[in-house]
Structure formats: C-alpha cells, structure tokens
Amino acid sequence: MLEIGVIREEKERVIAGLKKKNVSNEQLALVEKIILEDDNRKATQTSLDILLAKTNKLSDEIGQLFKSGKTTEANALKGEVGSIKEESKMLEIALKESKDLLEEMIIQLPNLPHDSVPEGSKAEDNEVFKAWAGPMPELIEGALPHWELAEKYNLISFKDGVTLTGSGFPVYKGKGARLQRALINFFLDEATAAGYQEVQPPLMVNKESARATGQLPDKEGQMYHCEKDDFYLIPTAEVPLTNLYRDTILQKTDFPIKMTGYTPCFRREAGSYGSDVKGLNRLHQFDKIELVRLEHPDNSYDVLMQMLAHVEGLLEKLELPYRILRLCGGDMSFNSALTFDFETWSAAQGRWLEVSSVSNFETFQSNRMKLRFRDDDGKTRLAHTLNGSALALARIVATLLENHQTADGIKMPKALQAYTGFEMIN
RNA sequence: GGAAGAGUGGCAGAGCUGGUUUAAUGCACCGGUCUUGAAAACCGGCGUGGGUUACACCACCGGGGGUUCGAAUCCCUCCUCUUCCGCCA
Image 1: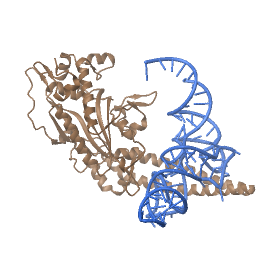
Image 2: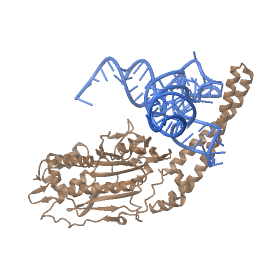
Image 3: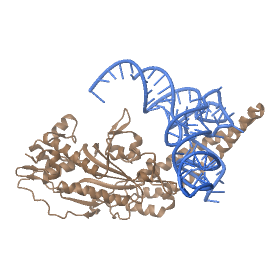
Image 4: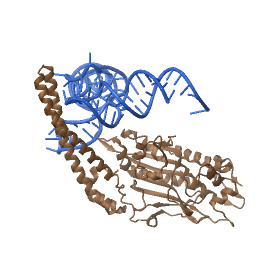
C-alpha cells in the first residue's frame, strides 16, 4: 500500500511511476481522488475532534456539578450534550466511510517501480539482466521431457495425484521423493550458511496476514480458502514469515533480519491451461524455500543484490543453465518496486522456466502491516521488506532431470550427492 | 468440545463499588547535576496514531459492538492465554 504522505507530497513522481507500471486510466485518476478524499477525511476528523472535545468538557462539568449536589444544573447540561452527540455520531459515521473509501482506493494502486525498472508492458519487454554465458547443454539422442523421465524412472506419479486429489498435485516416490527432500535440505543449509534463521511457520494464515503482505484483496481467487475457519492456505512462505513482524517497531540494531523457511505452497492457478500446466511446470502444490529480509531503507537495494548472488550460487552448484531477468514495469507484481526473475532452461521443452523471483517491496508491505523501526531522530519509519525464492522446487526438479539426463540415467550434480545419497537415477 | 479465571504503556503492576488515575507506582531506557571516571543519589524526559508551522486538541487499556452526559471500569460478542474435565498424534 502506497503511503498517503507520498501520494500527497510527490504526486508527479507517483503518477509517473504508475504509468510505468501500465496502470489503467481509472487507476491513474485515483491519485487525484485519493488526495481529495484525504482532504475530506482530515476536515471530518477535525470537526469530530472539536465536538468530542466539547463533549469531554461538558461531561467533566456535569461530573463536578453532581459531586457538589447541583443536580438541576447537571441535568440541564445533559440535554445540551445530547444534541452534540447526535452530530458527532453522524460525523463518526462519515469519518468511517471516508476512511474506508480512502483505503479502498489506495489499495488499488500498485507499488511504484524503481528507477532501474525498464519500460514495457509484457514479458518480452523484460530486460535480460544476465544471460547464460556458457554453451546450452547438448542433450543426448532421444532426450525426454521431465514428465516422461519421471515416469520412466518411477519418480513422480501425476496419475496417483489425480486419484488422491486432482491435477496439479503430483505424488513423488522413491528417488523422486528422495531428490525432493535432498533439495530442501540443500537449500536450507545454504540459507543457514548465509546467515538466515530457519523458520517453520503455519501453512494456513488468517485474513489479516494475507492482507498485510498484499495477497488480499488482490489475489483472493488464487488462494485456497478454508471457509469454516476463514483461513487461507499459504501461496508462499513470504506470507507467514513477513507477518511475523506485523505491527512491530524495530530498533535499528535489530537489522538485518534474515529469515528462511521451507513450506509447501498452494495456488489455485485458476485459468491456466495447456503446455503451461504440463508436468511440473505449474502445480497447485509445490515446495519452496523462501528468503525474507527486513532492512533499513538505506540498505535494501544492496541487500537485493546479495540475495541475487545467493540464488545464483545455488543454480551454479546445481549445474543448471540459467538467466536473470529484470522485470519491466508491466510484468512486475503489484507489490514490487524491483523484481529479478531467475529462469532455468528446460532443455527438452526448449523454454525457460521461472524458478525464483527476488523482489524489493520497499515500504509497500510494511505500510500495510505497520512494520516500522526507530530511526536516529527517535521517529518511527517504515522498514523495507524483501523476499526471494531460493528456490522453487518443482521446476528445479524438472530442469534438473532434463539437463542431467544421460544414456545411463540421470546424473546428480556433485553438490547434491551428499544429500541424495546416490549419484545416478537409473 | 465442556467448565472456571484472566488479558492494562518495553517489562512488572495498581485501577475494574463508572466522574481531579481521561492510566498510579516500580524497573528498564534517554538527557542533566554531582564525580578524575563510574556507581549511588537527585532533577527532567520517557507509548502509538491522527491533527497543527508549532501548540491546542482527538483516539487507543486483547478485537468489534452496546449502555451512559461520562467506560480501563457495566453489558453483548469474538479472539488469545492459564487451570480443570473430555478426546487424541
């Protein structure tokens, strides 16, 4: 959620930023409406405060009068307060409406893009920040896509998943399950070595949490919802991890806050179809190790680059061809100020698959969740939040299987062998 | 799931027979005096948000709603914690 102060005081910058994000004209028009409504809010608040001050004063007097036994005068004053109360009640309602309307409008505005974000509206406009330098892997004769490899070596059963639940819920077996567990441990160990504290959060969150990180109301339809308890299955560990610090005032010395968590992620993916959802490309449930950082605004972009380096290190160790994209204004998420996507090459499909998204949200999330820190001048300021996948499992498994297939089976990268306990899947 | 009790400012802890407690007091913390320095002692400051050039002022005592001229205090409801019972990995 953008800060109202920023909208008011830096209107031109806000509008320019929104344009870069390719928002609709209706959204653009909101900026002006928001400022007007905020004026209205202030005026209403002020009127109400004056009335409340009056009521407080009169009530005080009534109290004094009763105490000194002047019952008649006290009762006379009561009548006076009565009429003021009616008025203040109406103002209270008007104030609430104004606040609700204001919030409803502000919440529709996406975060402003960082200066370095390229112009553009679609995926093709994303900037290749770092291309794959090495040669593309040469596949063996008769190389298979990952879903066929999964079947051939009995690693994953999509069919069983359908029996148990439905499409998009694969069942991992044998070395497939073992590989998955190895990757989870590998990623967690790497994150721990980089100074992240491991966290095991709940896999369901309440409305407030989903709202604070921006999933609600924006992505309501993308989450699984347990109606009876009004809980949402987490679409990413970002939600519980970041919410750990909801409504918190940190000291400067608390920074940096570095958390990592492995969780399954649940996404309804309504509207997806075709080759997009083939095999492991897009699932309703997949495993992911997430990094979350809370940082001082002065550091957050340095930290973003650190996170990039961390993810790169993982992909290097897994010996996978990858590239890094800097997302253009139109392709970035609603919440983000700057996002880098990592993609690994799916050799058999001939396409890049997104396996990580690393973003700086600046104060967009912290504003909504009231995550602040005390600055040197003693005042509270909003902290910056960042997160990134390190990494998303299912697609890593897919590209791992495809890129490392040999005539004799699938060779595990060296870094992983200690975790899998085997060198080959055959 | 059932019963009882409890949720107050960073912490501890009063207030809870409605009105100079519209939040005491202690600890912690910050500044100052004193001191060679420190401790102690003393003085002052010390929650969040709205609002103002700055004051004033307003809101917040787990969340929401209600009664009243006036609610931390009374009522309703939800949440959480503690204890007991039941169930259970």
